[in-house]
Length: 328
Image (cartoon, rainbow, N blue to C red; front, side, top):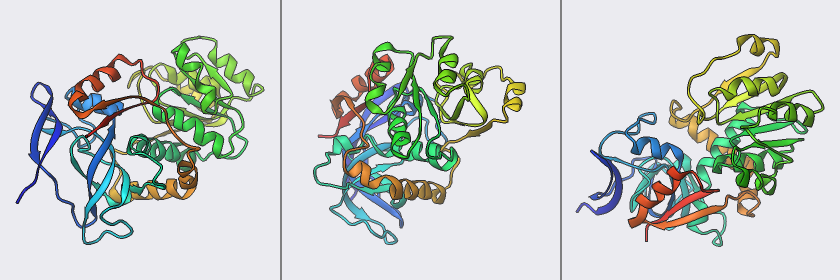
């Protein structure tokens, strides 16, 4: 007998709460009874009708990040069993039941960690460990700049950079209230991305050398500023494009500073590649999110029936930290 479940989908005219068939796990997948989900900006794009990799279109169950209890595992799954409390990244999260690849399923480290706390972590941990450590090749003592640092993933990036031994850690935000809080999460210096002098301030903070590693969540016209603030042989890892997907690019400055400019996304990665990202992150960071040293603030929690209000809250762009929805 097929189990029915409630889910939030991208309908013909936007958000719809519907009853649909619950999924079943494949051979290397885990079925989770979802307790809490968290919103990411990509969810807004999918809800607006855009594709996010192969996710999108009418009938798409929204959401990429969830936490709950395992109810069933595929025949090829190892290390995870029914009854385990887990946090996951994947797709079709905003529902009573969701399926995740076993490599993107992480056991909650302690019973003290709530599902609301857990659902805020997978995407931020995986994205920023991959950006900072794997692709950014962060070395101890190097200066780091996080563009768009007041977002959930940005706050996590500040914390990971500090934890992994960065020297001067800087973050940008165009919002004064959010910028004032960046030092709580590891920033030595909070810069106003709307201030034309921020590049000068970043250079001064590095003794004139420039920034060794920039994690860029903004791009657009900010790209040339990031290169101006970068050190010779600096690295810039492009994670997001909140300030625009296209802009004039100063190729001469890029060449002059011999900058290593790296683009990253999960959208074109294979299952095996994403599993490796999760494995590396867990190996480095598990003790620290278990202890609570790596954590994200929860801005507001909504019940599932008010998920539309949760999306509205994200659109207003006034939140600090993560927006969480509980399934009830």
